Length: 115
Length: 472
Image (tube, rainbow over all chains, first blue to last red; front, side, top):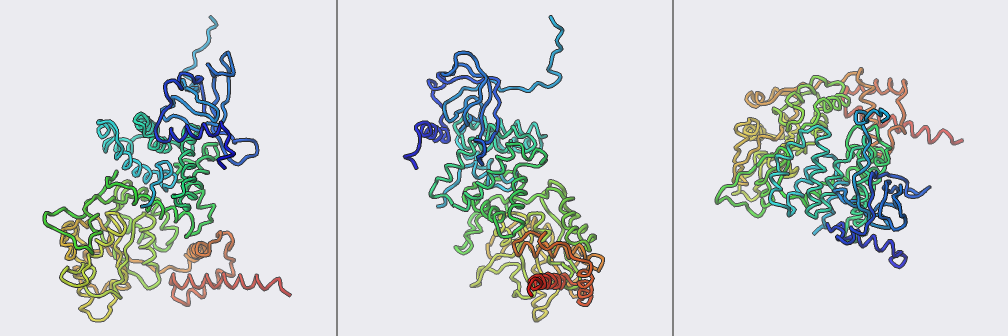
């Protein structure tokens, strides 16, 4: 079974073993990681028709290797989220987490006076 | 040495929020953290959390998780975050379940892990994911009660399946891993005395020197409702039996003597009372037990044995188990025999004397004042006055035909559990079946035991006619 492991899967599994032991990503890894803001973790079927669930994070990403400008994305399945919600590891890469998306309560909405 | 599953897996195996909370707090207190740990998250914090409203409680649980995460205790942090998940708010799960799943998956791959335990945890995890996907938004309880409910349904009310294994496993897991600090009410049963030594046979009783948890009555109304559904003919008896219980307080009641005709369900009621409250039971058969065994046998005898209440405490690992004496009035020979059982019972039935009972076998002073004493008798007349005075006398009436439909339904549910099938399989009893059962029951003096036999025979007869009907 180990022979069939893709490099990508091997990498996240190794990371996961370290995270489960209480290790955190290094400063260099954090610095290189894209930043997600106004994010929200969502639970979806892992893939259409599959039996299992997966958590993905939807949000606005900066510093992502694939996108130049800030872009709204949904990540690949998340394998670990830091308990203090400051970073997360998807199957593909590490993300830093900024403030999560906050649903505004009615009283928070300022009336727009048009100026 | 059994392997200790990681804390998130132990949360998955927990049957209630409270057991998970206690287990987790005990385990977390053992972890190396900063010096202010006990100040910030010690017993004071526990009291605060248990008294807090929902939002405050979730906030406190997540705060502790964050603190543990800062000290690199990722498993404990994940486990506390799991406690802060509620089915009513599905989004609370999303940031927690990836990590929980990671611990479960690693346990699945662990060759040393108990496969039955892994299976239980995996079944539970599936429910946690469904809750995360918002499938149980209208469930107002905790994830733990949700999991219990769903798994109970999945296993169609079997007595001997996963649910009970889970309970046994939970006990095993906790016994293997739990240190002896207890959140919640507890009692130290055996005082440490300088110079006192236990014999090798009694070595297990050493654990009585540590705090024993006291079982707390969660909701007295629920307990009463449950018992009333099962014993519709005994409303007054149930009221008396549960009179001393208070919501959220450890169970402690005046000794109770259930008196009623044979077959009225006295012993069953006593057992169900204990089960519904979650108390352990130690049964002592007055009719077939020798001499003064109840009070313990002194060390100078070859068969030295601690008293029944002490054995009950040890066996159940709780400070307030039920010490149940069946057929207290039954003579097993000479009146001297009963005299000595009755005499040895006396000191346990008064709070002052039971709080400082000197056990002849352990040779130590025990606090057994929390033990719940229940007894049954067909007739209270032979009992000596002083003994009767120490019990709350509860009359157990015989059921009447009026209670037949409800009682018969209970019997069928019990038969379904025994045969490992869904209760719907038997359907409702038809009117003609009920009237036949009623006649047979009346002829046998309205005893619960007789009703069990009659209903069983009725169902068997149905099976037989169904089996033969299609044949030509």
